[in-house]
Amino acid sequence: MDNEMDQKPNDSQDKHQKAKSSFEDLQKLMEQFNITADEPEEPEETEEPETVEEPVLSVDELIERAAASGEEPPEEDEAPEEAEEPETVEEPEAAEAPTELEEEPAEQSEKLEKSAETADEEAAAEPEKIAEAEQPKPEKKKTAAAAPKKKPVKKKELKPAETQEDLEQQEREAILEGSSKRRRPDQPVATVNLNQKAGKKTSPAKKKKKKKNSKAAKARRRKKRLMRMCTAIVLLLVAIVLVVSVVKALSKHTKDPENAGSAVVAEDDGIAARQKEGPASQQESKQYLAIKDDDSLPSYAKEYPGMYADAVSEPNVLSDEKVCYLTFDDGPSSTNTPDILDTLKKAKVKATFFVVTSEIDEETAPILQRIVDEGHTLCIHANEHEYSKIYASTEAYLEDFAQAYDKIYELTGYRVQGFRFPGGSNGLVNSSGCYDNIVAEMTRRGFEYYDWNAYDHDSEGVNYSVDEIVNYAVHEVSISSRNDVILLMHDTYGKEKTVEALPSISSQLKEAGNDMLPITNATRPVHFEVDDTTPPEYNEDAAEEEDAGSSDSEEDTDSHSSDSDAA
Image (cartoon, rainbow, N blue to C red; front, side, top):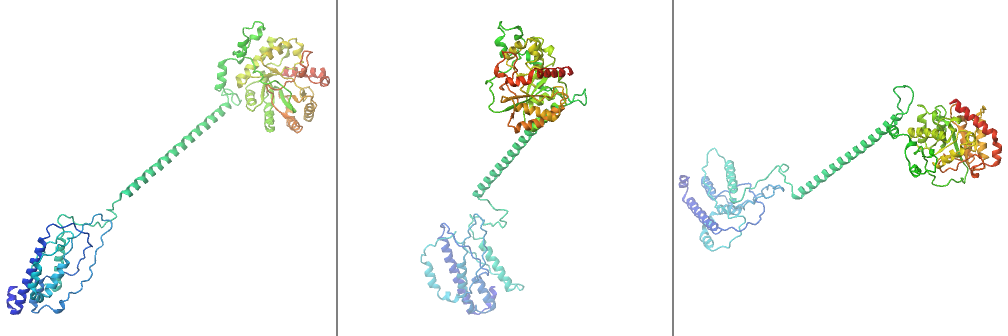
């Protein structure tokens, strides 16, 4: 390079020497400026650095180019071309702490470029510039830190293979490399995470909201699980109740394995418990404890300590309206009693059954339970329908009554409150001479007996038709002088016409305005006139007694006797 410079004319060498000395003076001024800025102030936030697309050539390189071409720098270079606005790279918004790049020495580059272009002018005004540079200058606010000292770019010799474009590209790369090294050493290099989705950070508010949402979701899941568990438990309880109900229903209708094909009553827990307790008539009651030390009572009064009825809470009075009590004697029977119960259920009517317990067998035992379950009243007619046996003495009657009482309680758990004398209270019980004693003893024990004041004539030994039976029943109820009418009928074997007549009897009595109710211990009883000691309020009118006559009583007694013989 020195050899080439020696070959140039003297004018070119002088210009080159002057430009070189001017550049050295400028570098000294820059070094002086850098020395006074030892303590940089806090950097101010500056705008994003602008990158110059085309590199700026140093003075040496410009002089070298001019010397190589043997021509002075063109005049058109005196005015610097307007630099195109560099494309700025937008930093992503998600970067939390981007580092601030120091201010690039764009002004210095422009000064160098101007000095190279106007070298002649600066050479002429060199003494004035030196004087101005020596004067103290006000300190400028440093942005991030003082600009590092620019290292002089070494002159490069042109190689024959390198073109002008290659040199310019190399110069650009050198400038970019130098600008990247001008950052503060204690400041970390700014890094940009291009994959924003992968490295995206969640703000504390979003984290808190996300945590709150997760807690709410867990609470909803716990609530759903709890509801499912409650539903399952309820369904399980319902299933258990249904299974228990079905098992109990089936246990009542099981068949005896020893007698296949015949319906029997299964021994459930209630029946077994009552059997262990012993006969109901032998269980001591409060009424018995009250009289057991009373020596004035007869000996039979202290027998059967458990055979007592509940006392009547209210006195028996006549009904204000017409009431008919349907009563059935001598049952139950497996052929007629179930049909009568079906008819009563269909007509929504309740009745009273005076049963003969000696007639109860494996087929008829469930009928007693059905009578109780369907709301009808169960009373005692007798254990054995034999007048001579049960009316032989007071003790004989109490013994027969106790057998019926114990059997009904054992099968149903029902304690009987009322009874009816076989043949009526004015029949053989009156002629036996023990009527007064039996009535007194049964009344003391709380039991009430019920005669009848209407009759359907189904047990007179005459083959009446169904219509005739209906007419008798409805007519005698209608002509009764009392509002409380007790209608006598039978449900024993051979009384199929009574079963056929019952629907018409109940419907016609309803149409006539009669209520049909079961007998209770509050029902005013009907008593036949036996003698002068019979209370008058229990007797029918004298006209009805005369109409009935002694012949009707004898026929009724005969009919009951024939039923007893048949049994």
